Picture 1 (cartoon, one colour):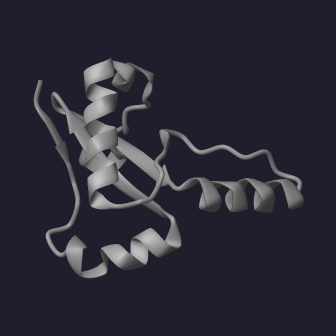
Picture 2 (cartoon, helix red, strand yellow; picture 1 turned 60 degrees about the horizontal axis):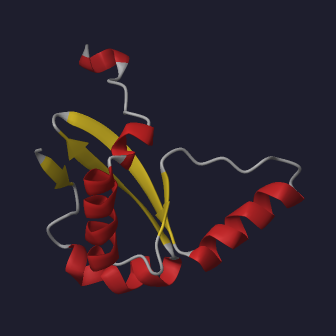
Picture 3 (spheres, rainbow, N blue to C red; picture 1 turned 135 degrees about the vertical axis):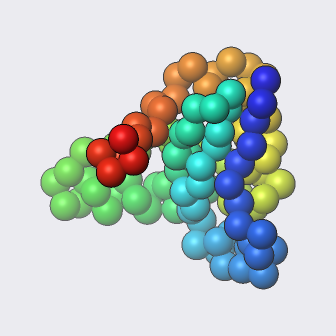
Length: 101
């Protein structure tokens, strides 16, 4: 199975900032299908949930992946686990935009 993740080449230069921020959205491509994954650490996720609830909105994030900390290693490990366990089938595939058709 062909799997890749779209992490910028210079990610190491600002990975500390992403880790501190506690979230990152990246694309994962599995056998030609593209998925946007929303990686959160538990603390940031809790803050996002609370913020939405305080505004009277339910919390919803498609393709939510919670990792202990948002680092390249944790992202790669999570993607590997999603693919190996077959849980990619639970993900929502990104639809091509109307412009791309």
